[in-house]
Amino acid sequence: MTIKRGAALISALTAALLLSACSSPDTDDRRVTDGRTSQWDKNAGAPEASAFMDVAAPTGATEVKGAVQINPQEDIYLLSFVTSEKKAEDIAKDLRSEEPLKAKKVDFAPDGELFEHLGLAEPQTLKETRSAGVCPPCVKDDRRKKVQWIDIYVQTLKDDQARVYLKAF
View 1 (spheres, helix red, strand yellow):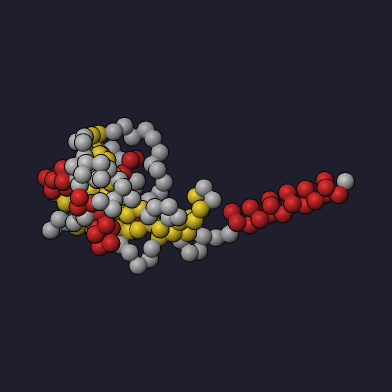
View 2 (cartoon, helix red, strand yellow):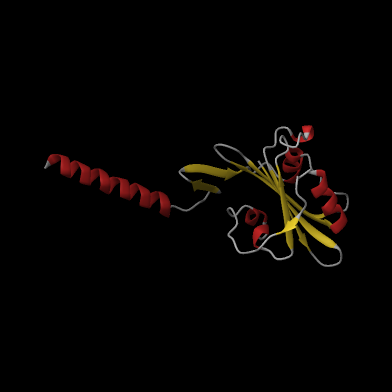
């Protein structure tokens, strides 16, 4: 009997803790994913993301935005800007992906809400978007040895413009 009461008490306390953790407001921009906490670095933006990826927004680019999400295992660096379609293509080529930019179906959910932090739609959900990914160490890109992976998305806009989305870890 005592063991059953103890187990019931522990179950009730666990449920109460879980409910209070789930219902508390997210006041400090933290997220709990798979039991781990991630948060946005309030002191990091486009310059830090650009430096990590070794990708600069081209001269004349507009709407330059960036952020760094601090995670327990690997940080995620985001960079986005609007530039000419040609410059966007050049950036994609410079990443040395084994495959060129390709259009993908927009029938799957994005891997989180990362670009939403920058006030942008997730690129995987947009039409007229092509993407590629690259493992810089795998293609022997010594400029980006510390980067494990870079995803690039290029969204075609009007007037020969394109929005570039870069995500790296």
